[in-house]
Each structure stands twice: as C-alpha cells, then as structure tokens.
Amino acid sequence: MKHTHTRKADLPFHWPNPPLRVVLVEPEIPPNTGNIARLCAATGSPLHLVGPLGFRLTDHTLRRAGLDYWESVELIRHKDLDSFMNDIPPGRFYLFSTAGKQSCFSVSYQPGDWLIFGSETKGLPDRLLETYPDRVAGIPMKTDQVRSLNLANSVSIVLYEALRQIDAGGEEG
View 1 (cartoon, rainbow, N blue to C red):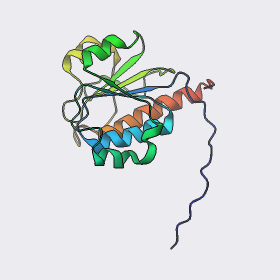
View 2: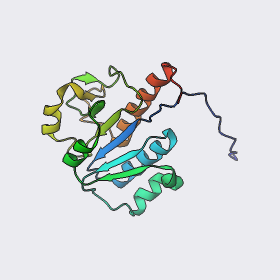
View 3: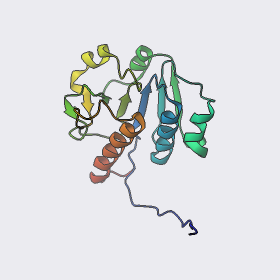
C-alpha cells in the first residue's frame, strides 16, 4: 500500500502572545530533549535548557529526534538553576513533579507562563519544590502502576493543556 502525503491543514488556533516557555532542568536523555525541541518548534515555545546536560547538543540522537526542526526552535541555555531562577521575571511559573499536590489540569495557564520540568531520573530539586509549593503540579496517573511518565510525554501533556486553555479563552496571538 502506497502512502501519500497531503498538505497539512492550518487549524484555527489562538497562539499565545507571549508564548509559553518550556524549561528543562538538567535533562539527561537526548531523544527526550530532541522530541521536546520538535514540540517547541510546532508550538512556537522557546526551549530553555538549565544546568549541565546529560549529553552534548551535537549528539546525533538528539539531532535525530528533533529532525530538521532545530532551526525553528528558540533555544536558550542557562548555567544553573539558581541563575535561571534569578534571571526569569517574578510571576507566573509552574513546576511539574510527581510530588505535585494539584493536577496540571487545574492550573489556570496564561500566555507567557514558564513550564519547568526536572531531569528524567532526579526530577526537580526538593529545595525548589519546597520553596514554591503552591506552584507545583503533577500529571494524574495511577501511581500503583507507574512511578512517572516519560519527560517528552509529560511536556506534551502540560504544554497542550496550557495551549488548550489559552485557545479556549480566545486570546489573539
């Protein structure tokens, strides 16, 4: 069976202005970061990488997962978590963790929000979660079945929930 490609539809959507910002703190697995970069390209969301990475940005598996979308990603590097937290404007950011007491679906997202995720094996530092307990959210899941979701999947769930809410609000972007 031959597969034919058709033109992609331009679906109506109110893109946030300013865009949502995706932040990865010390990501470790290149394909996850590559997939998240592709997601950021598709949504116009800048990608912030914080602290030491578990790979080089030239890693072939990172590049492969991001395909040819890297040129479309606004990529910003930050030396460490403390300098990043000092550099971002005070205000709207959310921390995503399996320790979250509120659901990511109950957060009221707005354009320009910062969506902050930890590394695949360590998550976000406890000191950060303890400093901002009202800004920690999690993705509902059956915790008796799994410990956590894949980082790229988690970012996708949260980012598109935030975009859904913003689009439902009808804000032009």
